[in-house]
Image (cartoon, rainbow over all chains, first blue to last red; front, side):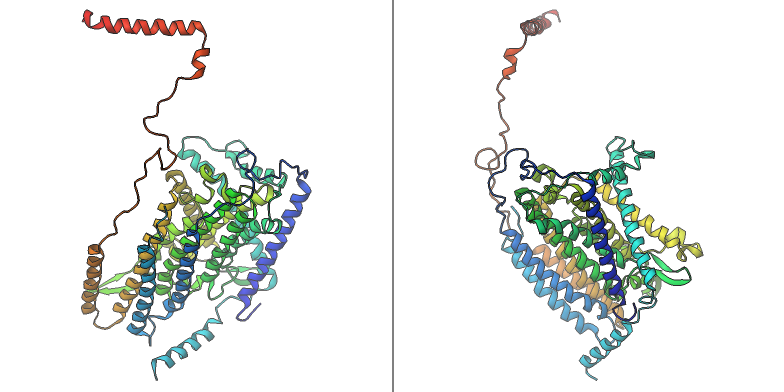
Length: 123
Length: 462
């Protein structure tokens, strides 16, 4: 449990403990709860009326656009984290700051483009 | 030496230094297992307490007593509810994708509590002769672990919605996926400011960095900056606070489970223990996010001001109490928001996330970087003027930019637009009116005749 990966080993132990907890919880639930499924119980709930055939619904394409935008800015923050730790240490200076300013500006331009294209408007 | 070589040298130094974080990685195995059990116990007891706390507080805000039957002050109410859920039949709908349907609540709960493993509860204490910090694991990038876990929580919700085989669940799952990723961006960007100020990604070191305020020179005066990042980095704090509520799907951002629109959202088809797990995940996620907020912005386990005057406040087991106190206050804020604010509409919600929070976060990072660079340089007063001038120039430009006109078509309510009943709707007479007893009809006629009489005779008498 020592060395560089010691902390991660504790995280792994936490996951194992969680798995045990789930096994115990689902086992207890299996023992305690009644089980007699019927056709009516296992139909999809749609406010009490018979479900409309098909368990699928149309979803808007906008969700995908937001997912792409998320990837853009999530990756941006991943690049920002190491920069934020070192930018004011000796040897970096104003150049580092300007570089990151350019990087943020390029991404902000992307956001502005999506904005003016009307992608961010949810009607 | 060229700058690039200097950078790589520095990086190599920091890597060797980072692998020797003090006080971690040398706990015996029984202590680690004890800490894991303590975390589970803390989270489950706090969840049971918070459900009761929330129902009592919301009850008080709505002028009703809340649960008060099971145990003293109704304290055992959530225990009773949890037991009831365990005894319920576990129904899997026939349209469900069984494996994913089973895995989704487990992913949700795991993603929620894993963040607690890196939150420091207190300083080094002695447990059976071992000196150890009150924290399970302090990996060097512990804040990233929390962010990764909160991203995994999206899977739990969206897979639950997808695998249930119900349109309501599917729509609820999609909504929450879009919502959580939108606010995840704000969350990630708001903590960049903390890293910039503290210079580290480790939670315990961020708490240590908030121990005391830094002295600051301005115009010959020396000021002490506030120690807590909540005050020092106030914009980041506010962005984190708002994003945190959006990320945990709590009111007023509880659109994924909007009862009036989507039945129960992504957990419509869940019952018994699996439903209980989603419930647990929601409350644990609230506590994890609050714990991160405390660690990053509110001084972590350190005592707040009046208590910190006492010398022993930040040693031994006391910090556990300060941490829990701050946690309860933040949970109260969550409940307070739920009791006060109505739910946002989806377009308002996305507008806030992408057009307000995101640009402000980006601008704030640049501004903060500029402030720090100016502070570090030698002739800061001259540079200050430049910065103020630049900022006001940008503000002026933004103000003068042509705004896009609102081109949304005005929909005619009732006719071709939304299915809203027209405002001049005439209600036909109730069919039940004809079935009323003749006697009551007669009385009504007599009464109306009487009022007509008084109305007509009134002016003559006057």
